[in-house]
Amino acid sequence: MKPNCQRICDLLAQYADGTLSDAERAEVQRHLDACPPCQAIAGKECGARQLLRACAERLRAEPVPPGLRSRCQALSCSPQAGHPWFRPAVKFAIAALLIIFTGSLLAIVTRQSDALLAAQLTADHMKCFGLFRPDPGTTMDAAQVERMLMQRFGFDVHVPPSSDAGGAPGTGAQAGGVELVNARRCLYADGRIPHLMYEANGQDMSLFILEGESREPAELTAFGHHTRIWSRGGNTFVLITPAADNSVAAAARYVADQAR
Image: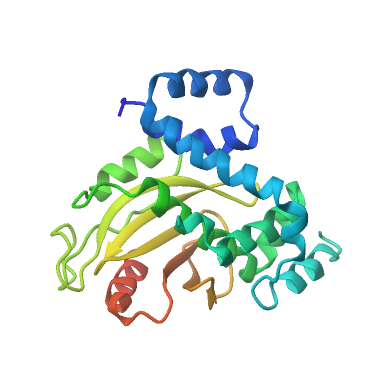
């Protein structure tokens, strides 16, 4: 892959949605024309959105996870108002988020609702691991990731480093350990947030950081994943792990303790 592939991949969601500036869209298109790997990823991004648009009417009538539709509708009336990506629960969740709400209204209700926050970030978790999973054995240095997030996106965040089973940072994952495998920038409400991707005991974990936002602690389940929400130091952290999987409990506690 070419040196600027990561930057192009970070723009693909906006490229697929048609929200890039003319200059950025031209830049992405030039890169895709010359880079088959990124072209394949872009095809998946665009395909997911095209499928949702094509099936919008039918998806409105499909059953979504209990309570999500009524919660969405209630919030919209408030005064302030194969591939993992195509699994039915995720498809219906994205349909609810994209079809019931649009634009700034989605931003408002996502900030109000822990359930919608969990749904949106769980979908991002599954999409990113489906499309941007690194090669087996690939790990990232936490300090380098912090510099990259600051230099590329302006995110000033602490990145929990990889740890072995004993909790010693930077020594790599063993049984019960955790490895930092990727870092991205994902959509959230009306902006973007850091997404840190980890693996522990063969399971995927994601830590999202909402800078400058505070929420009450919460734990809930969305689409087969457990979501833990807490705030510390003026930021909110959202940890996504497999639901009812005790094999990642120690790794999840480590990441949560390190997040600040």
